Length: 214
Image 1 (cartoon, rainbow, N blue to C red):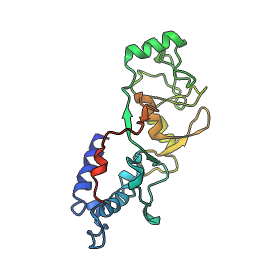
Image 2: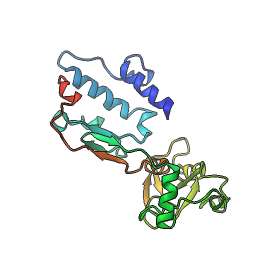
Image 3: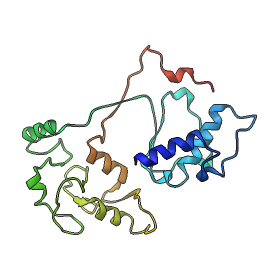
Image 4: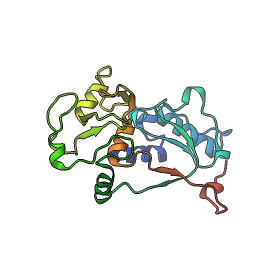
C-alpha cells in the first residue's frame, strides 16, 4: 500500500510522465488549474491499479465541490464525503485489553473479540478450517453478531473467485453472516481504525483550503 501511495503521489505531480495516464490530455486554455487537477484526479481514480484501492474522495470545503464528468465518476466503492477530519489514534494493546476486561472480550456490539494469543491459535479459518498461527494473517467481520474469522489469503481468494486475474479484492460476501463487505473496511477494522475518522465542527479559524484559487 505504501508503494501504491508513492506511485499515486508521483503520478499526480507528473501526469504527463506517467505511463498510466498517457490518455490524459494537457491543460487547456479554458481550464483553471483547479479544473485541470480535478480532471487528472478523476482519471487516476479510474486507472489501474488505483481504481481498486479503498480510497475516499473528500471535499474539505463544500463550496469548492464540483461535479465529476459522467464518464469520470469515482468507482462505486469510493465514497464521496465532505468536511475536515481528525484521525483518532487506534486502540493500543493495553486499551484493547481493558476493553476486553470490561466487556468480556467484545468491543461494543461489533462482536470483535480481543482474544489472547493462545485463544487465537485455537480458532479455525472459516474457509480452509486450519488453525490460526497468530492474529497477523487473520481478518474478522465487523458486522454485529458475526464471529467470522479467516486467513487474509483465504478471504481474498474467496472474494476474487469471479476475478481470477486480479490481486486486490474490492468487495465480497462474508462467509459468516453473508453480508456484502468492502475489502477496505475489513482491513481498516483489522488495523483498529474502522470508524475512527471524525468530522471536525466548523470553526472561525482559517483553513488552508480557503487559499485555493479556482
